[in-house]
Length: 451
Image (cartoon, rainbow, N blue to C red; front, side, top):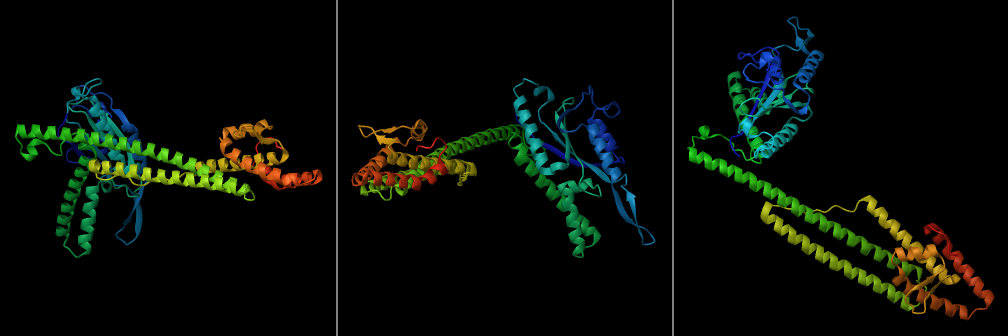
């Protein structure tokens, strides 16, 4: 499929123009009212692609015009409010036609998918161009070529000037106003305005080609306009088709690479959270055992050093992978997104909760050593914990290996200390330790108190 693009933008008033076209006639033809559809052999109702029906567009239009007034200056110098004149253009339309025949794009036919994509591209372009003032887009499939009609109302303009919604007409008005301000004669100002109109109209067609025609595999102009031979025109159409296919492939490639980056970001985020948790756990253990002997300090420092090495290794790997993916993407589509989003608030909260729970469990284990409810097994590789809730938390958080080393140090220090104390002094020291650590336990604990 390929052929020339067609887009025509025109405004209308309630008063018919020399060709007999008016707001009523245009909307009646769009709705396929019999008196306005004599040029169609077998009229069928239009399909609503976006917004409201042509009859509802008429209702919106009439309500808008009826509710607006403009201020006019009278001969005596006074001003008065008057209704909108019937010769003022109050409706803007856009017509886009597909180059294939209607019978070629029916349901289930090979060219149907390309046609439906063309409709989607048109709708996006129209919404981007006219925003909320685009009130309806309909489809006609009862003529030789399928085509779309778009209806735009100047809902935000107190003067109901639909012509101002046409970018080319707006450029004409601005050019004429500027010329008159600069002292140009009225005739010269009109010439400058007409030039601005043509330039903006070409720019609008170029934008439509870039956003709709090219992705849909259409050509910018037809063979007669450029005086091409049939062979040249066929080659041009094939080139347009190849360009559209290439654009689809490049867009798909971009999506694949973007998905790859998202997966890499997710992996990096997971690793970062894991390392952050390890760092936080190591810091918590170090703080809880700062009065322990040198072995505990060396163990904590070793955990921190290992975590830092893992972090540095991960950072190097992530940076290397990102640079590699960036280079690949730049060779295919010119640029690649280089920013990564920061962790969101919810993930930060989850990490903080994990840190808080880990700290609480660690303190409860240390307190359990003091009370005799936590001790190492004979093989010194596991913990014997009387409190099922605490034991479950240690297992769930995968702290057994790390806490075994801490418990070993705390037991050693505690046994050395208690070996020199009487029973009364021992009870007093145990009570003092419980009172010192209990606030931390109650602040972080989610289950039964280990004491």
